[in-house]
Image (cartoon, rainbow, N blue to C red; front, side, top):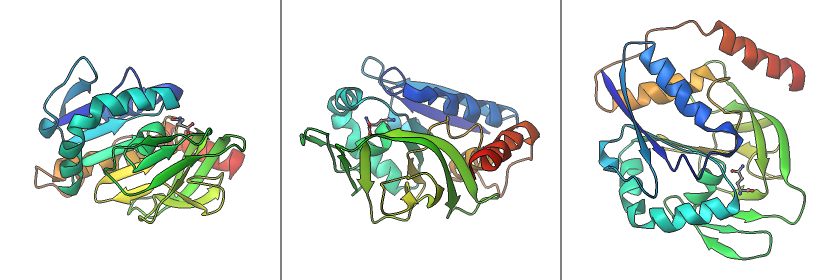
Length: 240
Ligand code: GLN
């Protein structure tokens, strides 16, 4: 089996170590004998997005988000169609905000989003939301906890199914006690860490969903997750 992973703007949206998510996906797929083709999609290297099975876009500064917005605008309809056709997309923080309708920065400037999904982010003049976060996910995965670290000024307001309810930390904003967005196989989240290494069950969920779009498979071959789950449980013990 073959998995084509697109890393969107790895040079501009890679704050907080989010490239670790790509390393985790590649390692977990290759450990199962899956051939992985990694495509870096950026302002000076464009490949055909329709070749992709799994897409990742990471977090970054407000300025980086604007640079990516301008460059990606002509491609947004293709990504929207891919999401509507159940392609797997993981968007973290800045990347998550960017795929929404708009981002209102702390000075009140309305920075347009790609509008691929209908949620809005408003940066607050209150302090940034920074800290460890633990959520109880709505996804059909075990365990139900997903752990990470959040660092964002933006507060996101969404009516979509969330990635989970907030057990520790803030998530989308200070009031709703929900975190992220799930729509088809699109997952938007504020969880850095990077999110996937300490949540191997989420990484495998994304890999399986991507493969099921083109192969008739029910599950992935189990691999040893003892170290990853030890790290997961350590976060639960320390902050849960
Ligand atoms: N610039 C956005 C914010 O501050 C996203 C930050 C990030 O990607 N961690 O909310």
